[in-house]
Length: 216
Ligand code: URA
Image (tube, rainbow, N blue to C red; front, side):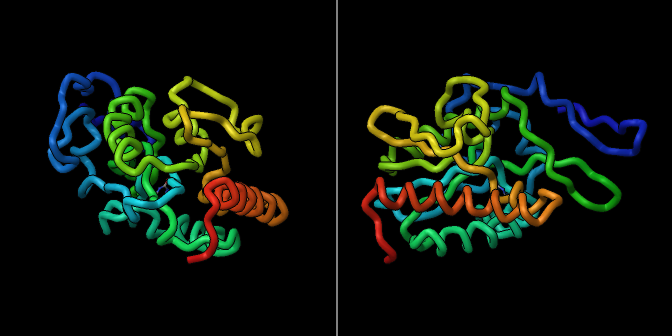
């Protein structure tokens, strides 16, 4: 991957040209299917019981997750925990993962800021998401945000807003679209933040009903 110092002082990397979809690595640690491993501390695998009936898919690990090696342990994770509890679920009842397993970032000042993964990186990482789906076989997937929805449904770009509240099918598995918890954190006005949070809770509640789950 090429690293470039842009005129605004941001250190950024070039996305394209480091994709090796022919590679079939045995472990996430050894994965070089795209170049994101170079700037990440470690890959962040999914967590949860192998018998979980609900899988939550986010976009990619953030700064805290990159350091901890676990998904959703930062601020977005704290909000997601609240939504999970409000929906009558527990973290143990769900399997949590991301569409992309390495943190993609750019340096702004001294902070590593989230950078959206490129479509080729999402496609390269679907190798791992598909393995998780085949192993966990969830009854319901909640896609947290547009990147996750596209990765799970593999159908190219879909409008997240128009997908909210709908139940899609992926084989026998139901797929529910929701906002990403980071969106519910970042949206400037409090009313929209509350509405986004409620949308996430609604999606999780619907997932619980579809999967026949109660609080465990
Ligand atoms: N955002 C995500 O999409 N996933 C995480 O694990 C953390 C933040």
